[in-house]
Image (cartoon, rainbow, N blue to C red; front, side, top):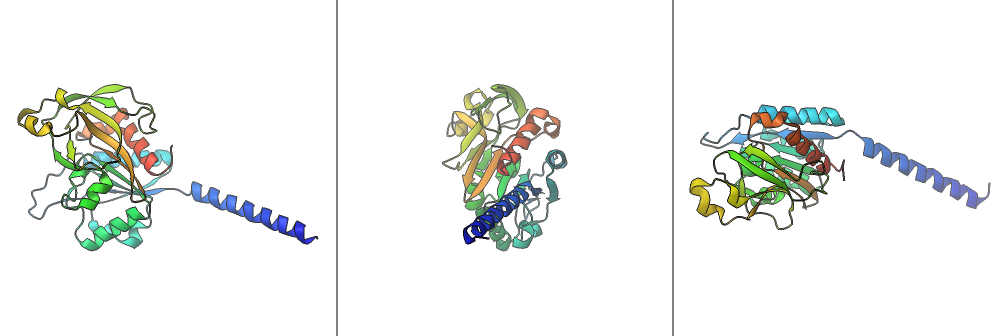
Length: 259
């Protein structure tokens, strides 16, 4: 066989193997860790009653899309070897101290830097309140919320794969979180008119925040895709198709499974 033909055949075989390898890699099942730790040294940190419902919602989403869902509230899960098993971390209603040691924080930082995904729901913005890197990954930091109430949620970007099927606006009853230390490059998805809220004794503080108060966003930070939604205080939110649809599409975006 002529040498040129042999090289062409070899090149064709290598190309075919590369395509097969890419297809296998793309079709490999995804795995996520849903993390729910709430801890303060004095034991006075608020623990949301919605945690079990939120975990179950992510289990349903995982089952629908062939995503393996593991859960933990144990910071010992944060080792490089264990985190390497996961395509994304979901901090679902975690709060206060997410980690117990700096080694666990280092493992989290390395995981994010390696390009894995991160999803955070509701009170996760109150996790690691004294660690600026975590707040950069999440995109902000919980400041306060006024009393739970009904308010209008506006879709800021209807073209995003996370919000694509939502109405232009909808009424929602929840704790409306105000977040500070917002990252500069957030892709804001949902907002609410700040001045339409019943703010009570928080009215003066609220004026320091954007008039279109951000409630959900995506961003890319330190090689990672990240999605956060501030809504989700109530247990029944996690049976609401509108809300769980946002969680589903936010997770899929983080995993690169929708565009």
